[in-house]
Image 1 (cartoon, one colour):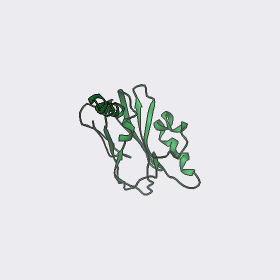
Image 2 (cartoon, one colour):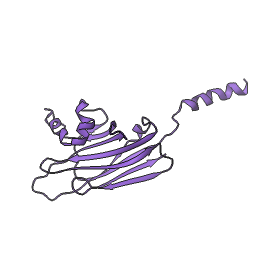
Image 3 (tube, helix red, strand yellow):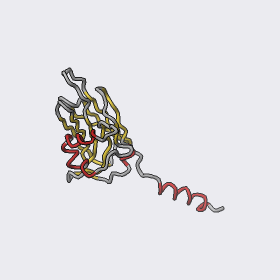
Image 4 (tube, one colour):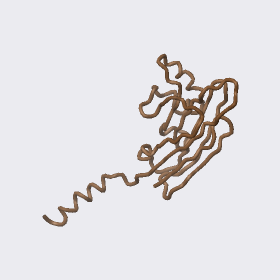
Length: 168
């Protein structure tokens, strides 16, 4: 067997593998509130391009019940609803989940990284709560990332600290 025959399959396999196996994680806090009537917030996490077009959804947490009544409140996450939500059929496999109680949560969006083309993006987190308020946080980033970086934003009411971590 010639040297070319031995290494050609390996070179071909390397050419078919993803060029960058990047990690993209989002840490989001849902603050504890001392209010008379508390309902867990609906939360949407998505990425949009520089033209304000939704590229992909990372997570949508809402009240999932047998009657589908929880879906009618999804439009209270107004920006997400206009950019992406109203065109989707809920639930979305691997994206939607139930509302979360106050606490810190990590969402691994590394699987979305392979779908992003090179360019400028914004990662958004929007929360809306019944008998409560609405809050929207975002961070801008360029893709692909060349070195590890952490971007943060701080919420004031419905969201706490947002941390987005990139590892090329």
